[in-house]
Picture 1 (cartoon, rainbow, N blue to C red):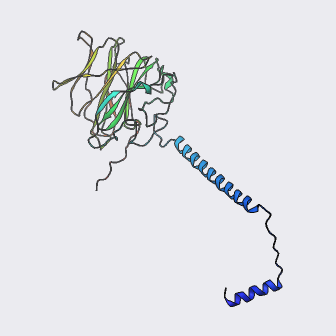
Picture 2: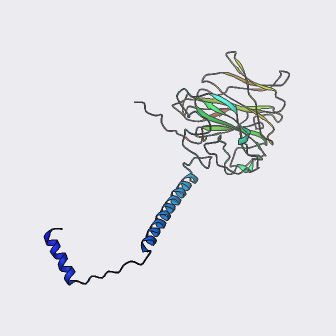
Picture 3: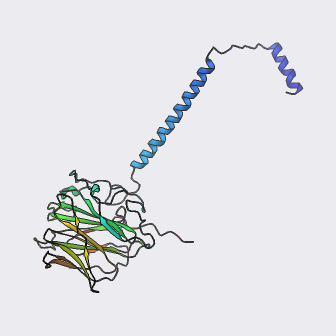
Length: 314
C-alpha cells in the first residue's frame, strides 16, 4: 500500500467496529467436499446432456425421401467402395443370409447404411406375404446396388401396381436407393400363367461421376437350370442364380451391361432347351429420368431425383 492507504486503514481500525467470528470446526472440509460434489454432479449432468443430444440426432431421420423411412447421405454403406468413385468397382456377390429377417413383419422398416438397402415401405403389407430380403449385392461403376426377393398375394388396389401373386423382386441402385430402381414379378399381365422366367431392365444417367447405369434382373422357378446372357457380339455368360429365403419359391439373377450392348437373356432347362427369353430392351439413357422395360416389370422407382455434384478438382 502507499502511505495514504496505510493511514486510512489505521483510522478505520481505531474507530470502526470489526466483527470477527471464526468458522466452526470442519467447515473447510465440508465446503471442499460440497465443491467436489457439485463439480462431479455438474460433469455428470453435462455428460448426460451430450449423450441425450447424440441419441436424439441418431434417432432423427437425416433426410427425407420418397419410399423410405430413413436415409443417410452417400457415400456410406456396407460395401467398401464409395458411390460413383472414379473408375468405380464392378462386382456382385450373394448377400449374407445373416441379413435376412424372417419374422413375418411385412410393414415398413428402416434400412440404415450398414446393411443392403431394401425398399419395404408403408402400405406394402397389403400385397406382401414375406419380408423383402437382399439376395445379392454389389457395385456398378462404384455405385452400390441390392437385389431383394419377396413373395406376394394378389392385389388390385390403387396404391400400388397390380399383383397377381407369387414371387417378385426389387433391384435398387444406391446405398439408400437414391438412384431409384425397379420391381418385377414372375406373374404379371405380360407373362404367361405358367411362366418359368421373367426379367426386366432399368437404367438412368443420373450420376455424372459414373457411366450410364443399365441393369437387368429377373427370377426363375425350379424348372430352370441356368440363365445365360447372350450378346450380339457372340459372347455368352452364365449368370449366377441366387437362392431366396424360405417362403419365396424362386431364384434370382442380375447383370449390368454397357451402353449400346445388344442381345438376349435366356433361361434353359437341364436338357438345354429354352424355357423363356427376353431381349436387352433399354436404349442408352441420356438423362436422369429412370426408365424400365421387359416382361415381368411391375414398376420403376425414382427415389431421389438429384445427387450432389462431383467434387471440384483444383
